Image 1 (cartoon, one colour):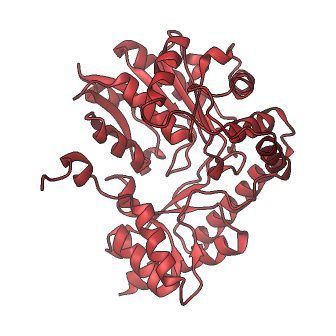
Image 2 (cartoon, rainbow, N blue to C red):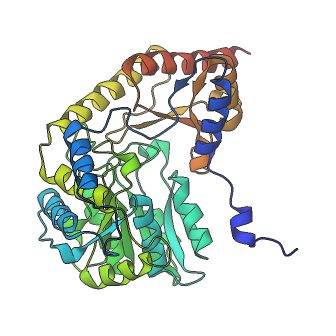
Length: 388
C-alpha cells in the first residue's frame, strides 16, 4: 500500500495535546492540577448561552455564507473600529470556524510553495504545523528571555530574504504572555513596509492585558498589508462555539472567503449570531474575567519570587513561562516527572520552540488555589532536582 503524505507524517504532535492525554490517564486514579491548557475556566456568560439557545430554537442550524453571517460581520467591524480607531466595515471581515482557521486561511491565501514566514520562537506550535502542511517554510525569529521575550528588529533584518512573504506576530503572546507596546508595533509595521511583507497579527488575547493597553497592528498599517486575527474563544470563554474572524482589506476577504468552501464550507449560524450579541452586548463579564486573570498572574509571580524563580512579568493573555533549566532535565522530562510525582500538568517549553526548551508553560486560566498550589509544586520539583 502506498504511504501517507510525507509532510503530515513527519510533523510532530503538539506537546500540549500530549500532556493532556497523559494527564487524563493519571487522573483516572489521582486528582491532577491542570495548568496545561489555554482555555478559560469560566463558564460562557449566561446571556451569550441564552442567545445561542434562542437562535437554535429559531432554526439557525443550516448553512450560512462562506464569509459569515451579516450581523456578526457588522458586529466584528464595530469591535475592530472601537479597539483600533481605524474605520472598518463588514466588507473587511471574514468569519471562520475558530481563529485557528483564520490563521490557516491566511497562509493559504498568501503563500506559494517554498515561501517563507517569519515566525516567533517561542510561539504557538500550530503556526509551524500549518505552514509545513501548506508547503511553506518557517524561519524563526527569537524572543529571548534577556530581551523580555520581545522581537529584535536587527535580527529580523538579517532573516528576511527574497522568499519572505509574511511576518507573523502574536500580541499578547502565547506562550510568553508578553505585550508589544505602540513603539515596537510601529517599528514592526515599518519593517514590513520596507520589505513588502504581509503581517499576520494574532490578537486573539487582545482584551486580556494587565499593565498597559493593547496596541493592534492595524493603526500602523498604511498599505492594507495587515491580517488581524481575533475571535470569541478567549475573551468571552466561548472556545467550543468555534468563532474566529479576520480583519483585512476587502480584496483579501473575498479571496479568503472562497477558501473556506473546500475545507469547512462555513461556520455555524447559531454560534455566529450569539457571537454578534456578545460583541455588542454588556462587557462587564469581559472585565471581570480580565481582572481575575491579573490576580492569578500576580499570585503565580508571588510564589515564584518566594522560591527565587521569578524571571519576568507577562503583560497579558493567560500564560507564563517558568525557567526549569537549572534542573538539568529537558522540558518534556520535567513535565512527565511533575505530572507523575507532583500531579501537576504543564506544557513543555520545547513544544513552542528552541528558545523555550528550558522552560515549561503554565496557564493561569485556573482557580487561584490551583495556581498557588500548582506553582508551589513546580518550584519544589525544581529545588529538589537542583539539590540532586
